[in-house]
Amino acid sequence: MHVAKALRYARNTAWSIRGSAVRPVGCAQSIRSRFFASSPKSCSEREPQSVSALAPVGVEAALQTPINPSSTTPRKIFSEFAIPDRVGIVSGGGRGLGLEMAMALCEAGARAIYCLDIHDKPSEEWEAVREYVGRLKPLEQNSSSNSSSRLEYVKVDVTDQNAVWRSVKEIGDKEGRMDVCIAAAGVLKPEKDVLEYPGEEFSEVMNINVNGVLYTAQAAGQQMRRFGNKGSIILIASMSGSITNHGHAWIAYNTSKSAVLQMTRSMACELGGEGIRVNSLSPGHIYTRMTAQYLDSQPHLFTKWSSLNPLGRLGRADEMRGVVAWLASDASTFCTGSDILVSGGHHAW
Ligand SMILES: NC(=O)c1ccc[n+]([C@@H]2O[C@H](COP(=O)([O-])OP(=O)(O)OC[C@H]3O[C@@H](n4cnc5c(N)ncnc54)[C@H](O)[C@@H]3O)[C@@H](O)[C@H]2O)c1
Image (cartoon, rainbow, N blue to C red; front, side, top):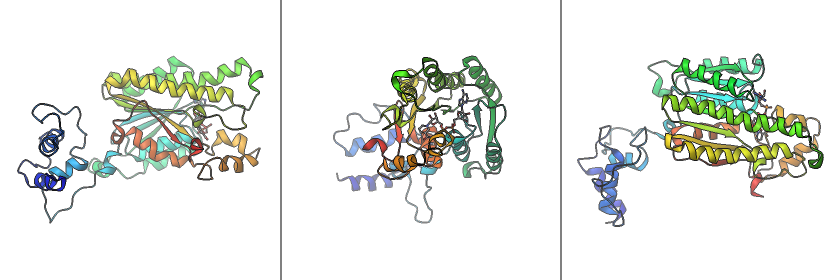
């Protein structure tokens, strides 16, 4: 039978029940098994392996929603990106990309996002963001509970494993859950010839960019396991983990970012069985305090870096919002062990 006919049939059948306890994916499989000869098993033989928290969504929703010309159908795609009531941590969340991502998670509906950073007190910029976040309208699906989002600050050095674990456990004790982790704390040092690179500085960079990322991810993962609510861990790597920046002597930084890529795959494989997803995000050149140390003192680099990707410009910190909202949310529940490159196409040339 033609597919269009099959869909019409599905819409008109009595078992197309909207909002019922019927297992939506299984029923859709039954539709498929009727109309697609290659379907290997019927609904009664195979239980669905997983179901969307917002099920039915997508084509399944279309198949199960009775046609009613007087009502409109809900748009669910944005709800899939929402993270209502979830709790997360962002290392390096005191400024730059970390702060931008922490704020994005609050806008996506998180109950509380804790920014872990090394400074004793948060900056004025961070305080302004906290105030803005406190005034965000509740998510539509939360509007009755009037819940808003909180941005919190915790001073911690990510290279101190015990301190990171302890701080994040305290967050777990207070909030009773842990859902999202972004490990963004990192450093980029001045350039040095690879053959003369001092071991002490190499270790310092690795300690922050690799060990610190591991300790942060461990701390969040421990709480995710403790509460059994699954979770999404996002390790901030860099395109410099996959390519070498032309003309720059950044051996420690580049090596550290490659390590984060493999850490991502390895953690993802160990934790997948617990529903804890681990992905890395690899940004291209973005103007932040980290890159300002180069761009402000060597203005020609602005033109050079801009010319190194097909879009012909640097990225903006806010251009990380969409990808972290996606990775943190149920819109990406089948994504783990992946590196997401957001580089303006720098890596494609
Ligand atoms: N800006 C870019 O172009 C770019 C590109 C690719 C990847 N990244 C990565 O993104 C992440 C954020 O970079 P950014 O550009 O926002 O830099 P940034 O310097 O503005 O922010 C880094 C943050 O990490 C914090 N931090 C550093 N050491 C710490 C420690 N030991 N403990 C706790 N916090 C510590 C800093 O205080 C700061 O708030 C880094 O991992 C960086 O490597 C940045």
